[in-house]
Image (cartoon, rainbow over all chains, first blue to last red; front, top):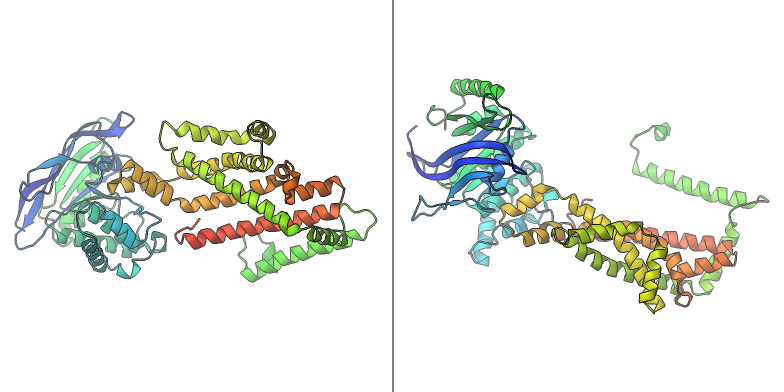
Length: 273
Length: 256
């Protein structure tokens, strides 16, 4: 399928990250660009990170979302400025949406209040905000649950609430830490549908997620990064391999033999790292 | 029937109620039966009923109101003071104040009352402040534990929404855990209610259940003592029940 790469969406320049001055991740360099496909109004980007447990995926995500400052290097994201598409800035708290494994929400706010709070920094008027919230809740099938608290929602409703909340705050860029972990088949489909909705909504929308499910990663991603220990050390992790599914002709296609071959390669990478 | 003797066996609500009633009736019957024997440790039911009657004629309701009013004042002051210290505890410079105050719960009441009596002249005010100081140490301990138990994800979630540190404190700690404040009041109220006897003996003129029980004990009127114990227990249980209902009514999201 014909595609073009446009402006840089995010860029990690020699990032090291960790806790209490000890680097868990080192030498992280990557750049992801806006993908434009012929004949499609909008093609968002979807990037997977896979790696064995304890290899620092969550630590990387904290740096990527501005929740933790890298020990060294820079995390840059686009300013989403249409006049100047190449304008970038260092990521800060609130720039990137982050949905954790538990789909954390404010426990004391109803679904509607959660959305209203997510829009608190928006310059829109009260009426406009109300319209945005009603539109989003209707689109995601949550309008009849708008007065419920998170503890009164089902797992799927909670996921969607957490996703819309972050979408309203961060606009285009969202990071999901193991969004498929512990979900039943119905909820996995519901998260996949949510991803498709986000990606089809805007050209610049970008999803970054981590998973242990290699089949899912191969099925829905444009790019897969493997995080693991580099050869000869277990002291730190880095990106040990990258598979660009667009170049491999596997992106936006039905799951097939090519994907199965890719999964085998990833398995070998994971076992080595 | 045999199921009720198996460990971890699930039983119906009606069966549970029947078991509770069975135990209560057995206890009352045992009490009545033992009161007919020559030597008995407890006052007889007749003595206790007499105790109720004399207490009623001496203005029991006024004494209950006095105790409840003392308790309410102490709880309100204590909650306000404790919450200020607890809500400021996430500020590194102020954190040691709350944690140190929490440790003061190991101080005996006598020590605290001595210093307060030097500072406060009015006996009623002294009663209130002895309870406030005593309750605050336990209350601060409970609320600090609630704050410590908040998952890091909740703070991270607020940060991803662009909240400032003060907004995080307001949304996650203050508003997000306000139901726990009522729950902590419920748990610590039992301590205050228990302390009434000692504290109300400071000022006999103000009356109260604590004063009545101390007075009855001094006069050796065990019927009145047990009658008062029953009243104190029932009011305590009612307060406990009322606070749980209040929490659930005010905070629909509260599933503690």
